[in-house]
Length: 243
Image (cartoon, rainbow, N blue to C red; front, side, top):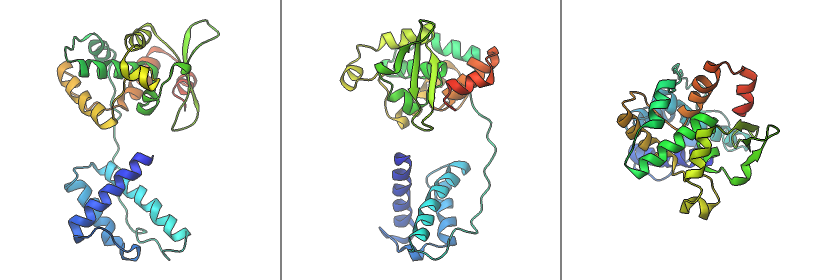
């Protein structure tokens, strides 16, 4: 959440420089035209999608509402700023694509590592930040005497309990002596979210997968291909995904 607010702060500063050649603006000068102009700037200059731009505006509006609550503004300048979210069909890998990616020989070490982490996420449902912060203490022995991930999700604070499949165990074993993992007490050497998403595009191209893969599509793959398509009850899927 903090990263998102820091990102929109940077965008607003860029927009102020672009539109007004200024580094700051009085809060009272923010009006409906400012909101529409910022949306258009996000779409045209920053190349953000419609839904992403609306989400940034929504975050900006939360700050505006804080100003109103604290008496800095008397009314909401974005009250009549209305945009419609476009319905987006979730992107996920099919069983064939998942197997093909897992078995694909990738000689580039950087891309091979990201591929392994992505496959791990597809088989555990963990989000980017949850995989990045995964520690040895998050892996426990369940009542079935098998290894499970028992971790509180950062976003919802709900516990996510997922059994470790043979392939996920193999991936963890592969990186247990990685310098980054040893230094940071982490199970996987996860890079930044932006680099991760850029590398996924390269991996998709190498594997011949014509889909816009992101870190979040791994959770969609788990929820659809790995579990529901194999008859796992919705209640169990919900528990594993930390809903």
